[in-house]
Length: 176
Image (tube, rainbow, N blue to C red; front, side, top):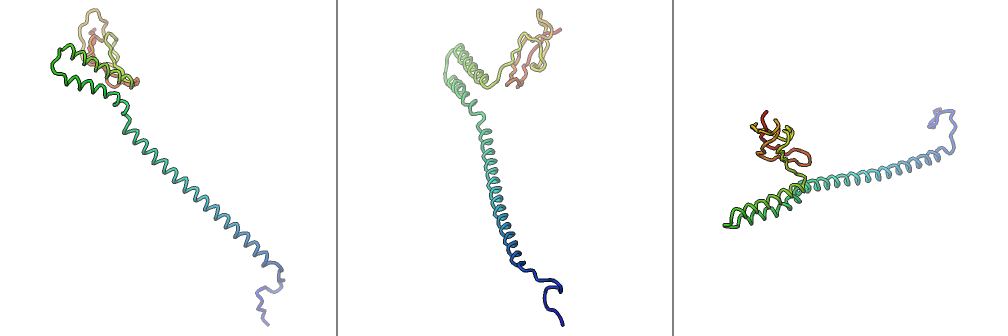
């Protein structure tokens, strides 16, 4: 005779096994559901953070672009009175050389004041020893009473912006 029982011969049926399996299975399913919910929450948090970072990157890019476009706004605003002075000087017809020269002097003073407010200063080395870092000697001349290598004539003033040389002064130096 053949045994059609799914259990092997000699095994005793275990009571309560299906109930324990079902409880264990339900616990596992609950844990899976809990982990899936946690995973979905973490995914949502990551997406929000990613979007926030992208928005910050765009804002930073926009702010940098604005800063580049309007970096010279203050300087140019301060230069407007200088432009106005030059324009009004050009509209005057006639007038003597002294008044025109005085007007140009005032305009130059205003321009130099704006430049100083923004960190630029002149290099005027007359009577100083030649400094190759700040001066460019274009000629050597006889200068009785001056030490050799001393600047005796400034052909073009130099300029420094916040301790960085913009343009060296072109000078004539006393010969040895």
